[in-house]
Length: 284
Image (tube, rainbow, N blue to C red; front, side, top):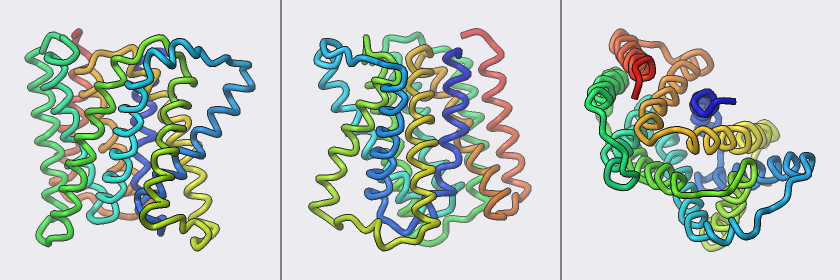
């Protein structure tokens, strides 16, 4: 599978996360913990089935990068899920997808990639599209504002996750993803024990099924494709393709939750998708 296809599929999968997470009656940190744990266990089954072997030397070489990336993953999920709970899915998507702008701005400095002028233009057009989508939702009260702030914080963690993984070398999939999810679950377990504790036994069977789905499909398969694609793409291409995620969120929320798309949302979606497609048609 090509890196671009793997990354696009991961963005489509991630786009459905908000629909599930928004209605699971657990704290954001506990949802992130169970996602990490279930995803890691799922990938371990695949790893054992394929008779994979851990490359201990490569793990040691990348240990600090893996730890930093796992911490960024924890923060990304906690604040993103909190954003979904505090505001609309569209508002959370806009604030969260300030991250591609950060990636494009930082990739010439950190990754030493050449900044292509056209990509800046496409990102600006995509941001205008996202802005129009959010404007149709309304952000008048303080709860929406707090949700947007949570989304912006999640964007910072997502940027750290993206850039850190560009420096991880020698680890193949699903080994890399399994290690990061396991570390994330490890860190989150201590956080939960020191704060709210585990409340999973108090939720409904339907919510448990949502958690399992998030763990296997979104954390396991989604991040496997995410890291596979990321390892083969430039930072600026990652930033542009990431806009598929919020568009997917909007489409799924409209179809499943029944949120109606206003004219501004439709215009915004066209601008967002159009800029993404144009940026990928042209050569980097």
